[in-house]
Length: 551
Image (cartoon, rainbow, N blue to C red):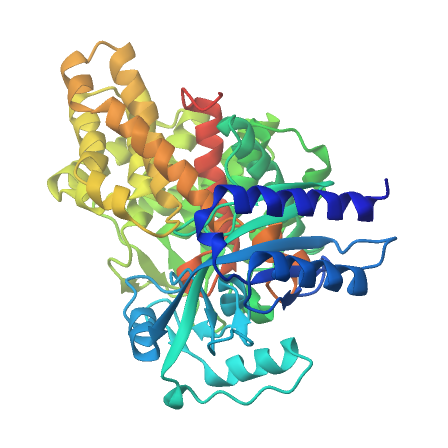
């Protein structure tokens, strides 16, 4: 049997299976087929709104007419509409406008009773029919984008839609399947995982696969000169033009971390080029023993505590993975730069102007402090310079005094885990526990793929495991380990909803450029190098250290 005939046979069986198991499909439905190449936004055809048997005939007629028997499209996805509901336009518009997080309206939509103009949820976002100007500005329907999408999609001329004149629309959910490697993969219906594949029964293997694919994506973003392609807004393949020293270094750090779960020798030339780019472009020596990483535009250059920390993390991780001390001297000079930004009482200064070294901002963002502490501890474990450890202890006195656990910051979780390895004192463990214990409900209810939460939880999990090993039984009882493990499992699963599986990527302008990237749905499906970094680090920790998820 040819591939084409087998595809049709399997599709027929899948539709028969759906109708026998889903009572909603006894009434009228719409069948959608999305199809296209890897390097271009997919096309979407749909049947009339009719009974399933008639819609199925129309679907197979379309396939026979449009698909070559010799070559199927790279991507094919089938959707079956159900729960078709007439709703007032005002109600839908308000619902979209008042979402707590942008881009979380998860239904398809027909714009007339017969649904002769209809879009899947994935089309609505892929073509920016619903969009926001930024993550903190509310979503709205873009009339221009809607009418442009209609013109592109339908051969027959359709009347232009004026949103102000709309009275009602027909919202619907879908059951969907994606054709991959000669078989159909069922996709989730409704809610946060709408339209993506389920996690395999062996979760660790599924997440290991995500790590491998995402590492390949992140590696591909390093250009020949060592600079990253910083990111995209994928609906219309728009580049994010900023650049950032911290994110350059921490993204490399995460890519280096992937060597802890996979060996990819072919990645080394680009990794070395990217490290060299950072040292050539951002690294500046103040004197023979002190250096800083600079950031910002020409004329507005600045020194950030977090940039020095990020560079040290990158360089020490390189040494940990390779066993080579090629960059140790740079890391040590950057560490002395951090020491200049910490006063004798352990208080930090976050930002200086460059090249004047005068104060720009005493405090900018909480994560600089935890990141700096972690960087000093990582270097201390290589060179045993006691000044680094003593400085971190001073910093921690301030973290504890100022109740920094209120920030539930992932870098604070990382550095607390690291410090308790070296100095297993009760006060540090208590700080580490409070960094997550007081935020269980917030974390459980967070409806975005906030990747740093898994990082924070996994660092805490490793610390709590040592509590038990070291006989801190009272503190271990206070750690709520079973609840922590449940929350880790939940977040690890939830974060897959922000991964560009092909069944989501196919609706964007250039699927090939963002395939297997992690994205931020509530910020215009943003794909940025640090979005990869945070997801990679969390999943690597899960695969390496979490007990459970193998079956």
